[in-house]
Length: 135
Image (cartoon, rainbow, N blue to C red; front, side, top):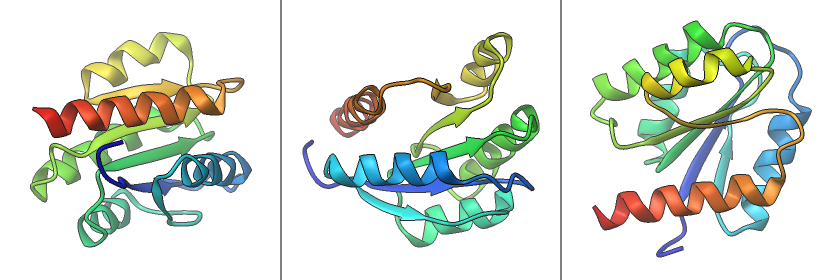
C-alpha cells in the first residue's frame, strides 16, 4: 500500500442486514485501510456524497436485497457526476453469478459473494488502488 487508502463501506437501499458489511469494514481496517462505515439504509445520493466529503479512494457496497442491478449503477453514475469517476467501486452480498459480468461492465471493479476470504478482498482492493495510483 503506497499510502493509507480511504474506503467508504455502505449499505444502499432497504436491506437491514449489516453484519457482513461490518465484518468487511473491520477486515479492511485491520489490513491498514481507513474505513468509513455509513450505516444502514443509505441512498445512492448519500453514498456518493459521503465519498466526496470523505475524499474516498474506494466505495464498497454490501447488498442482500436483490436491488444490485439498480443501486450499483446508480452509485457509479452519481460518483461520475461528482467528478469521482476514478473511485474504485466494489461490492458483495447475494449477487447471482449471471449478474456479475453486467455489473463489471457498468464499472464495478469486483464482486465478492458469501464465502469470499477476507484476505482476498483486502488484497484485491489494495492492488486495484495501487494500480490506480500508478496510472
